[in-house]
Image (cartoon, rainbow, N blue to C red; front, side, top):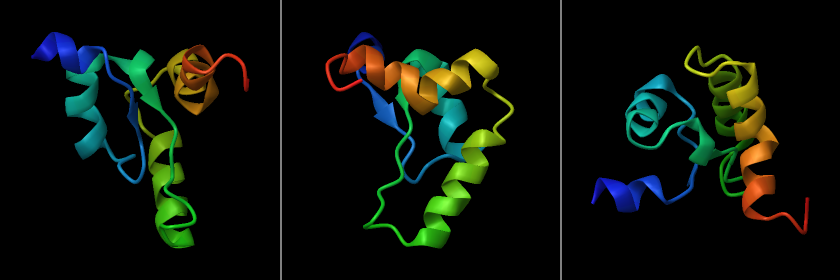
Length: 81
């Protein structure tokens, strides 16, 4: 089962907090995490909190955060990138 979970991609909407990210990273690593906000369904304050939590998350180094912000999605969907 863990192998199946490691093959999936996970977005941060609206779970950019350490409580949500740390368990996810233990299973899959940063290479399968994608930036997401659920905007416009999520209200703007929720999106702002998600972005702030994600960019301030101490569990990502600069390269991992760049992957979450764009690089991981570009790898999955190379044509639109």
